[in-house]
Image (cartoon, rainbow, N blue to C red; front, side, top):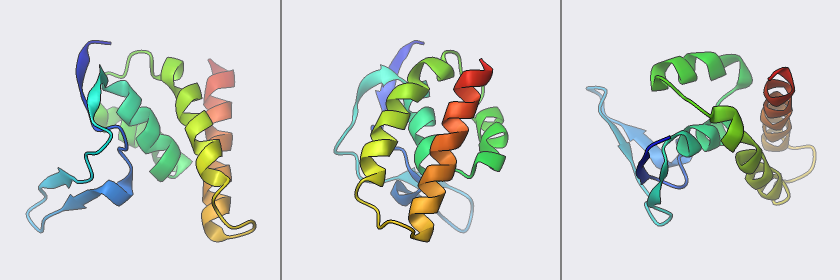
Amino acid sequence: GPLTLCHGDASLRNVFSSPSGEIAFVDWEDVRRGAGVADLAWLLVSSVAPAEWDDVIDAYGPAPRLNDVLPAAAAQGVLTLADVADGSPDAAQWVDRLAATGRRLSAG
């Protein structure tokens, strides 16, 4: 896709919203120029329950080549999972999102 400003760590832990609905991203240390869909891929893998992926993708808008960048997001997710306590609720959520990534990629 077209190059744009990418956050580099677009996860829900780096998003805040105001009572009026304004959304702000914080922690811009990984900012770079790249395809915006890479931020969407990381948001899905790092933060969104698989049942909500289609809604998030629809809200994002056209997401060409999302499946091309999902493998890199999944690899980053596996590395992140390595730092999560075995058997914890957080680990279960990571495993669920990583499995959803695999299902999406294998479905084409």
